[in-house]
Length: 179
Length: 156
Image (tube, rainbow over all chains, first blue to last red; front, side, top):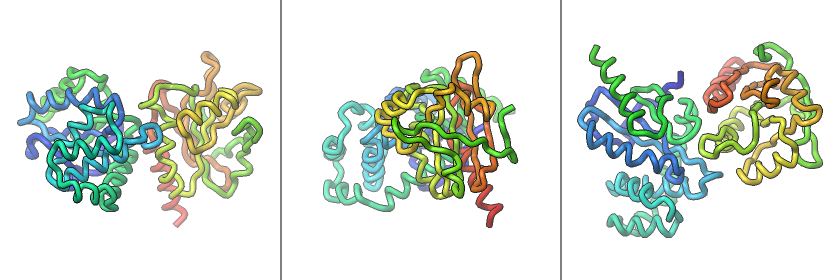
């Protein structure tokens, strides 16, 4: 059974309740259509279960098949340096079909990032290393495609692109925790 | 039973491009990862070869060369590799069909395709790790990386 090899840590971007008993980690690729499909499911989950759930997003860009995946990941991390990771994360998934480097700059404008700082951070070695670390931790944890979800360290193998498959996994884990 | 740790890896000499062959013997001195897989052109995002294409740097860190093997022809492999921008060789176990897969005991007689199986072979041509995955499940890269890491630790 595949399990998470890098524990959730302060370098991770997270939403929901950081003290919750349940932690859901997504390995995602900003240019992957299946990750785009999962995006509203996660939003709904956080709306409905956000108080019981801690959500973390890690980068797993498949660069050869998705030529803008890595750049988009850098853009989201760069936005994160200005406190707007999730705004950028959401906008990229919601406008995925428009994705290219120029468009990432317009998104940065849309969320009010300092354009000079954003441009500078797009070449940041530190950001690239962070994405590489995310990717390697995914590989070592058994990520075999995107999106992959780990619930309290274990890969959700029953995820089938429906909200219910995520909810069922979460409710099952929640019950086990209560026992 | 698929070949496993301690077995000598059977040699192969298969087309890697329309006019070039690659043999396991030529790769001696390197670690070799063989990924047998059922067929080219499986769906993109969960595709095992696309994943390994992104993992080559990590394999290289452990001095390992990856080859993919299926029963598809060299022309099919060429088109597939171009389409997916694959940066490692795909070998055609095409004639006699599946002969190498049979030697590793990973041939599916019912579908006439290779099973989805992984082998990690050391510098001397000895299998150090092998894994048979259900056909529909992409086994990821974690098992390969764990095996390579263990080999490096033993060596040091």
